[in-house]
Image (tube, rainbow, N blue to C red; front, top):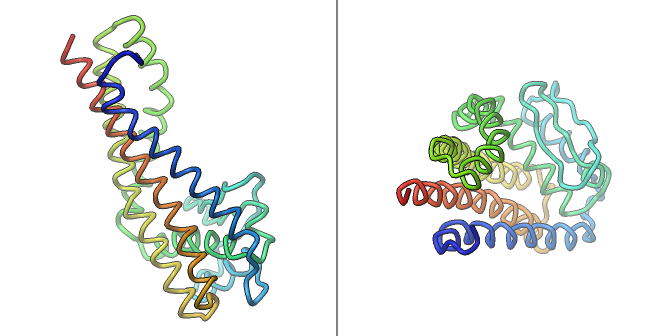
Length: 226
């Protein structure tokens, strides 16, 4: 596999960009976790204020263990914030909490790309769980039919990642707007910090899309050669 030049041509760029994106988001998260908000408001308090301002009082906010495990669950209408984001009055926590509120607002407004992503989640989970076995069978045991199946799985993942891009970018856009409207974010270091944290997170989704595209093209090249 590693001696295959097409692997380095198609797959390696996505891997390298993914590593870079993860390094950036961790670096910005660590940096701005140490910068306190001027109002001393923790992530959970920010999220509650933003949700209530948009009439989403029924959306519950729950702490979740781990680092950067923050997400919005549209099936339960729950906002899950990692422990540090939930209880820390930092610029990083403010930005992440606001971004997840952006997803809750999307859900309440029936934002079309979010609805599309929710619809494709079940088949995406099946494809991602099956891929390791398909790749092993297709590459190591040289079963061409499994390689074709792997191509379809990566095509599903590619569509999912493509839909994810506008969902994530729009959530960050909504977060920045409502933070400014409510006067929670202050010009200067706070605004810069929120932008850097959210922009670094956006890069991870771009990397995931490029990685899925690279793997799809790589498997297609292997199938064509066989």
